[in-house]
Length: 66
Image (tube, rainbow, N blue to C red; front, top):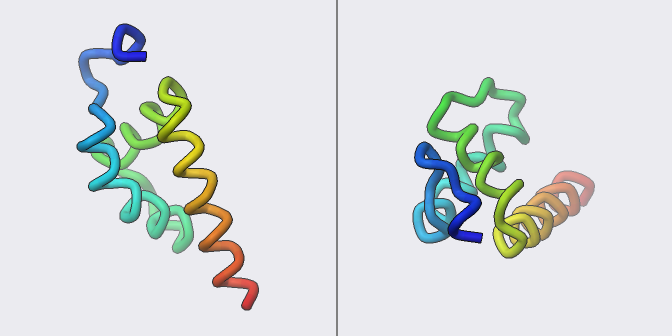
């Protein structure tokens, strides 16, 4: 997967520090800036992070529903 990461992308370690903010921004309908858009792009190239993002989205949806 590393070879697929674009130069403007981030590594998984940096991604994990931003994903919570990304999920909250999506949850609130806030417009994403470039710093958070990279979270989305990274998840498209990294299966592990995509899986983690899906889990977080489900947790937030469950929390909102409960």
